[in-house]
Image (cartoon, rainbow, N blue to C red; front, side, top):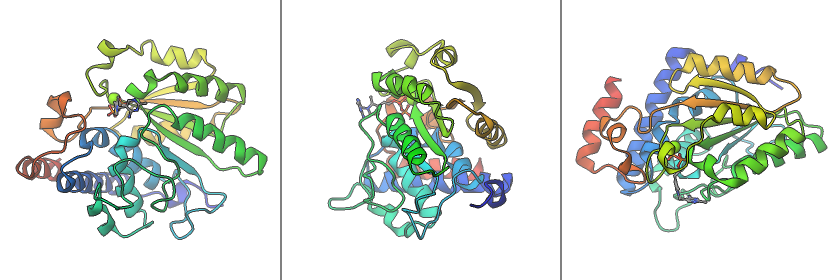
Length: 280
Ligand SMILES: Cc1ncc(C[n+]2csc(CCOP(=O)(O)OP(=O)(O)O)c2C)c(N)n1
Ligand SMILES: [Mg+2]
């Protein structure tokens, strides 16, 4: 199996890739006139680093390669970001992205397992992805495969009870091949996390559940690389990385107003957003 770091892009290339993914998500959701661009933008650097920082080992021509690392987009409403990453990773033609949310399109508004190559899990009903990830870890153990499982969670998603059931189980099973990353953008659908249902003291809760916990600036690719490398070294317990992010990162209109959750930009707004992304 290839060494993770051997396939990594440079930091400058990763920043460029992140910009390309943001632009594609913007284009997809603007054309579809729906979707969750702000939920994608907070996670762009995390997903970019996982795919091209040398962390996820995959074969785009063999999506079911048994030893592949698994990436579960548990916050399934960020599907456009997942599809953009998979297209850039060569799983399918980038033209497919423009079919987002069309009737009978396989590029559905939320990911459906195997409907597009590389989509590992059906998600969108929040709270399930960590359990799915743990299932993959336990399956790998049974099959004597040492792959890594990465799960991307939303912070609002962590208000769901099943997350904590999975957290407890993962620690019980010493799931050291499980790394969960929380996109801690401080907002869920209807408002600030602190108002709707506070998570703090968040890190302490996960530690109390038996996890290794680290925190990261979720838009600083170098920092993400370091924290992922540290998590890969942890033995005997699962790892959680709390990524502090900005919802809508890179587009001022989205950063400024959480009510844009689940709303695409108009074509006119998108022109300005594109300029902002290109200038960032
Ligand atoms: C079980 C469930 N309940 C409610 C929803 C509706 N919903 C979609 S996105 C969302 C907010 C999620 O917030 P967060 O996890 O913080 O994601 P963000 O968009 O901030 O990245 C909600 C409540 C859902 N998809 N699934
Ligand atoms: Mg959130």
